[in-house]
Each structure stands twice: as C-alpha cells, then as structure tokens.
Length: 258
Image (cartoon, rainbow, N blue to C red; front, side):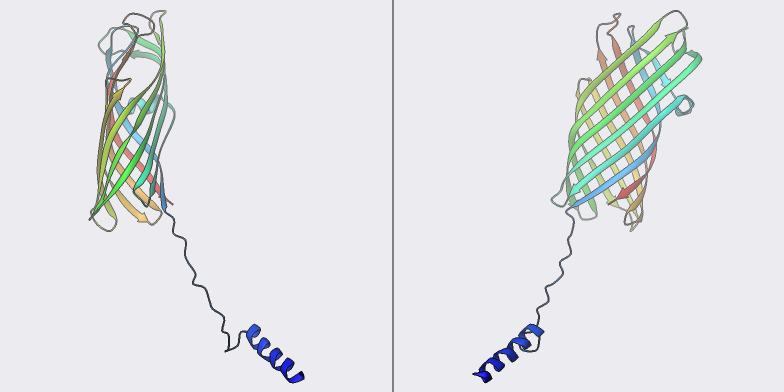
C-alpha cells in the first residue's frame, strides 16, 4: 500500500512540475489588428470670395480677396476628419468657421455707397458617408451626405441704415475622390461633388498632393473651389437674402493618422 501511495505521489509531482511526461503548452500570442483607421487634419484655407450678395435689396457684386479677408479676420478654425473601416465603409466630416469684422469707409462694389461697419460670421459643415474601393495603385471613394451653411451678417451703411441677416440652410450632396500613389511618399488626389436643396446649386472641385512624412503624419497641399447659389425671402422686404458666390484658394494642412 505504501508503495502505491509513493508511486502516485511521484507521478503527481512530475505532472505538476511540468516535467517531460506532461510538458506545458504555450498558447500563441494573437495581435489585435484594428478594423478602423482615423485621420484628423487641422488646416488653413487661404480663400477669396467673389460673386453677388444682397440683403433686403437686389444683389450687389461681392469681391473679397484673401488679403482683405486676412486683414478683417477676427477668428477662424478649420478641421477635417475621416474614419475608414476595413470593409470599405467610412465617415467624412469637415468644418470651417470664420469671423470677419471691419470699420471705416469700405466701398461697396458697383454702387456709390460705403460700409461704415461690417461683421460677418460664416460656418460650413460637411458630413458624408463614404465607401472606399481599393485600386491597383490607389483608392476611389464614393461620398453622399449634407453640406450645412450658417451665415450671419451685420452691416452699417453710410446712411442711418442697418442691414442684418442670419440664414441657415442644408444641401444634399453626392461626390467622389480619386487618390493615386505617385511614389512611396507622394500621393495625388482629385475630388468633386454637386448638390442642392435649400440652395439652387452647390458644388466643390479640389485637387492636391499629400506627402507621407511617417506612419502617423502627412503634409497636405490642395486647391479648392466651392460654389453656392442661395436665395430666400421676397425682394425689398426684411427677409430677403441672396448669396451667389465662389470661394476658392489654396489649403495647407497636417494630417494625423491613428
């Protein structure tokens, strides 16, 4: 009996000690791979605005070069965000806000009148769903969503006349972007969209290059043009407002990838 007990104790000690009779099995280490890729891009838009705009009365020519916008700039913020899933679906968000102000005798193009004081706040928000198609040497993105405008204007003219308006409208937009690899570090892309809704027409055309600095940072340079043709209210009444403009210029930004 004692021999049986001793034998059982001996074999048990071998098993629990991880001896040759029962070797420990190591489980393989599985690395978790994220199914999402994200990009966040703060940017500077060096844009000019041309076209026609009217508050209460018929539209007058509007011409704001970037130099004038920069001189009148009070505050501005602009950022772009994208999220891409491994299955191809993704999200695109872009926000651009600028606040302009000026005093003095500012001529109104096409008229003999001048502005004594003007305050303009403009915000453009874009939110799109995306689907990415992988190409042999790049990608093709299909996009659909909304572009929302918020525009507030307060203007004091050379006579006791205050013009003020605040308008908020949404347009539905469809578009696409093509990206191709020029080299290991350089990428070229073009994109465009078109839509309408509250406005009669809106569209974007843009093209640029991106330099891959490392796995988490790119440098981006592009040229972008944004059109909108919006009108609301009845001419010569306080609720009338029209905004038929083209904003265009260079954009530079940093693209953080995570």
